[in-house]
Length: 158
Image 1 (spheres, helix red, strand yellow):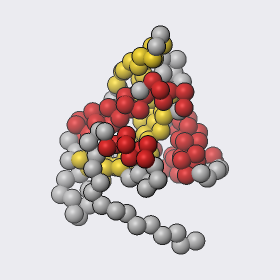
Image 2 (tube, helix red, strand yellow):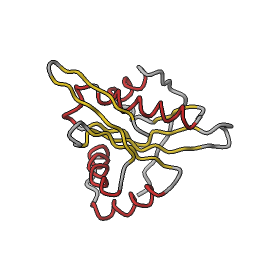
Image 3 (tube, one colour):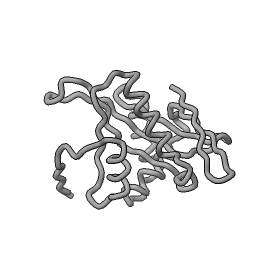
């Protein structure tokens, strides 16, 4: 899958390319997820997990690059189907845009690639979870038609 887009910001034109992630992209996902979770994951520990998920047909890892092949963002998608849902859906597991590209509408281009993939795969719906205190993420998804469907209760056990 390939999606090419352009972002305009004053006199700067940035070209984005969406591609499937490769094994050497592990550090970008490790950094983004560590920052998101406020944990410092060891790259070696994360590497094994990343390799396993990258080979799993249930997951799709996409990378977004600029015109100079620098990583601008990425997303982890999981194809799911539960007993309650008759049709398959895609859950957005992780979505990140590096700070340099956030004001260039990079998140919108990355999100458009997810919708395009969903149409190609003929999935029933998109699903994403956001932390309760993450109004930026909640607003991003709400502007794209996402609605709150259910509450998720979480308890730490260790």
